[in-house]
Length: 117
Picture (spheres, rainbow, N blue to C red):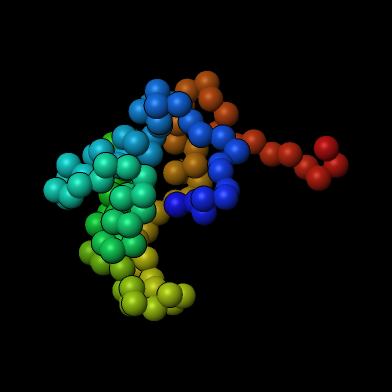
């Protein structure tokens, strides 16, 4: 992934990788679609090769719970061969604010920092 002369500035520990939401998503998507996704690079390659499956999993929240609140519609991707120009979930209906503010726990829902800070 990196040229041999470049090294990442930081790499997460195996424990942190195992606990990451992207790992839960990767494992759930692999099971759902019957594909081998042993690592992040495989997840990325699959997302490019099978965008409809990938984005269906994103919408439904595979492995991370919740998913998107709203109506997905029948179509996931229209004109996927046109990048840019593809249309994702063209029949979907959702409330953006409802999805942002759905958690009712003590965690911050929105954080704002003005430019004067």
